[in-house]
Image 1 (cartoon, protein in one colour):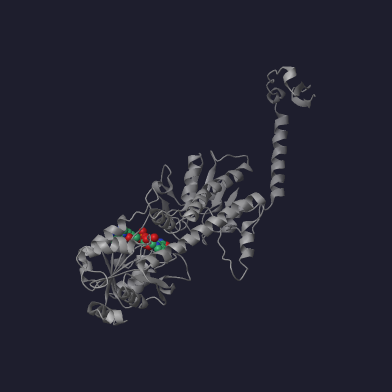
Image 2 (cartoon, helix red, strand yellow):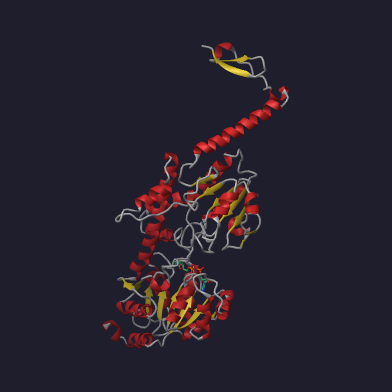
Length: 509
Ligand SMILES: NC(=O)c1ccc[n+]([C@@H]2O[C@H](COP(=O)([O-])OP(=O)(O)OC[C@H]3O[C@@H](n4cnc5c(N)ncnc54)[C@H](O)[C@@H]3O)[C@@H](O)[C@H]2O)c1
């Protein structure tokens, strides 16, 4: 703490933080920013949320939450108690002593980082930066962003980081929809541009978050987040490849992963699925590979995992084609119901959801696509790449029976899986949501057909009835067109006409 006490601005800020006399700001009130604003307010700060989206700001001020992990009651109590407010007016930054930036960090079409939201938020902070202010970047970004991009923008005001204002990076690790881990009980990693910056950011978080872990620089903190998400992307890529391998080897990947997970050390289970989704795992590793490339380093694991995971929606479409094939149907003209469009279980977030890629590909191949998702009532046309917006269908027997195939793309707990099994003609299960349920109608990703024999029996039955229908047809309809003549000395097989007009082939020499 010596570093702090030697700087009067830092000492004053630390004292205010410890006395809960600090006015804090959170820029970007989304999945990350709103829960953080709530925790800071609970920790004793007077919090102002700043967002460019007036609808979100109005909702916060009404005490109405749009983030499932933040209950209305909690939000409303903090707003009513004067601990939390929201605004679109960035001049509010003048009166704030700390500010956390939680704006989006997407990729451009070229898979390069799109830092425009971050730059715009930092410009606002720079416009109102004042001595003694603590600025913390939380948006996931490439290593070096805080010191190479944010710090120069803020220091262009004439104030110096670590002396006049304080700057740190602390990655957000929220897992939306996780009932066990939330902002307050996930350890927070902090790396400041100086020791003083780290100490002040740590003091702020300690008011609301149980464990704070410090690292030596913002760059290290940025890299921590990218390691975590790259680790997930690569392991999901690996298990997706293993799932496709298991398909060809006739092995059930779900059984294999569950059995491997019984090893008490050295193994962590990852599960296959229709591809990567959400704002983090499909995107963040490319922030890292982009930065590595700038330094002449080729991030091969990231690229390979991206290829495997990016292929999964197409693999799912192939599975759907297989399922329809058992009914002698093609994707073209089939009615297909996507069950779940959110990128993961029990959330309403469709960003980067692989379900959308599956639906788009099916639609392009001529399928009639609909969806049901209790968390996503409507799907705009631009989101799924279809010709029109879609509304979530209620899930009942009548609706299920209208479709040639239902494909489980998100294993929401709210789905009635018994109903789905009982009333779907064919089901493709990409999440093992149906687990041990075994019927000839179910095709699971990464697993052999459970009742293959019964499926074949089904098929044989269908073939028998097709043949008997054909027998009833008039003889002239069954006669094939005569084969073109082939000179006798140029062929190994000879066509021999038989009495009923059919041809059979005979080995002649
Ligand atoms: N969603 C997650 O699960 C998650 C988890 C960990 C980290 N992150 C990271 O956190 C960051 C935020 O993600 P999110 O999911 O909360 O995004 P989000 O889209 O839910 O929220 C971002 C908010 O920022 C606002 N915004 C955009 N530009 C702004 C600006 N210039 N000024 C003020 N507000 C602005 C938007 O209106 C929106 O409300 C990203 O870098 C993301 O990678 C997200």
